[in-house]
Amino acid sequence: MKDRIFRLALFIAALTILLLTAGIIYALVSRSLDTFAEYGIWGFIANPEWDPRSATEEYGALSFIMGTLYTAFFALFICIPFSLSVALFNGEYFKGTKISSAVSSVVDLLAGIPSIVYGLWGFYSVRPIVIELGVNAQGFGIFLSSIVLAIMIIPYASSLSAEFISMVPNRMKEGAYSLGATRMEVIQRISLPTAASGIVASYILALGRALGETMAVTMLIGNTDRIPRGLRDTGNTMASVIANQFGEADGLKLSALIAIGLLLFIITAIINLIAKLAMKKLSAV
Amino acid sequence: MNPILELKEVSVSYTPGKNAVDKVTTEIYPNTITAIMGPSGCGKSTLLRAINRMHDLYPHIKTTGEILLKDKNVLEMDAMKVRRLVGMVFQQPNPFPTMSIYDNVLAGYTLNGIRLKKREKDEIVQHSLKSVALWEEVKDVMTKRGSFLSGGQQQRLCIARTLALKPEVLLMDEPTSALDPISTNKIEELLLELKKEFTIIVVTHNMSQAARISDNSMFMYLGELIEHGNTTQMFTKPKNKRTEEYLTGVFG
Image (tube, rainbow over all chains, first blue to last red; front, side, top):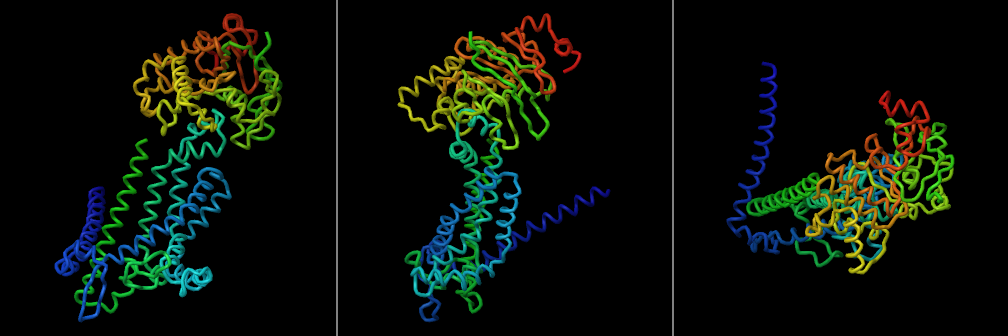
């Protein structure tokens, strides 16, 4: 009897989560419908115009999709050398030592810093450096956002990659050492290739976080509603345009912002799915 | 005949002051198979792994004494070079899962950054696989992953990978304990064939295996080398009481 009640409770809890998710999706979809009815799904996605003036009102998502891709991929690019070093440090060179657990706790601490704090730090500490470097006059933009974003996603990429690197069976590595390989050669030719799909999966997950990251980017990207003309330019990501503009939006504009939210949700879900598939492939080896 | 390998007071310790292998002194002659026997934890694998400097991978393990390979102390040579001269086959077959069968055989060369011409590569692969009697079975599936083979085939692939580097001595750490009887039998036949070219030291739990394939046997107990001699003689007339007890199954 007790067992039955417990099972029922678990079932209800699980069902509630499913219903909640379905509810969120329903709310996003139903409020986006006006936009899609006005422009068509593809017409909305492919249109770079975002003009909220009431006389010439027109909404397209392309500028923000491009802004998101620019910042997320550039952040990923900056993050790779750092997170891979940390992953090798913790998963291979200093695996299981005190210094490794110290480094990984500090890196995990990075993951715990609230986004708004990163935003403040980026605004007051990194932006002057970006101006000093002569990237652009105000400092705001894709470049500044990506740097801060890269630091924010390092813990996600590195701790998971370290996990996969440390999972490479010792007998594989000893096999390579017994053939006269140096540590560098073992890492290059055995550890990294064996852990490759796991490492790729952890970078895809990090990319997923970069795509959706909102607060810090909103504070740093410069809030410009057009396709960025390069890394030095200002722009808006899908997340930052919503955060910047939802307060004063109504009617079609609000619907367009919610439609952007829906697109972001779908993109992130697909990215996470790809990462999961990549990891599944690894555990089959 | 001169010994190919001389061990002089070789000790290995995992924790300071406690020897897992204690002052082992002995000689190994070329083109022989030497079996190292003894109960679990007697130090036989530890001794074997000292010979190709595998203990260097774990800084807390200390090896002392002298291990002379053709009169050169391997403990003072470059460890990478030692490992190319002294090959090792492990208990669990460990072909590299990301490499094809072909690349697995050549792994010793690619890992060491040695570049070969296509013709040389083909020759080494064919010769090595033939000498482990695997060529006929895999010649049409060269591009498949090494992990695609059966356990016994994987182990022969690992032996081929080691032989490809033309080592002086071949160390084998219970090479058949993870295999079925038929594969075990094939590996044993293979070892008898290989001793014409190589010197083989094999750690084994299996006394009848030692009796079947080895020329000389070593019996270790609690880190010490108790007895080392001709296999037939040791199995029929052991000199030490402990050896006799082990061989007759009193303990072990």
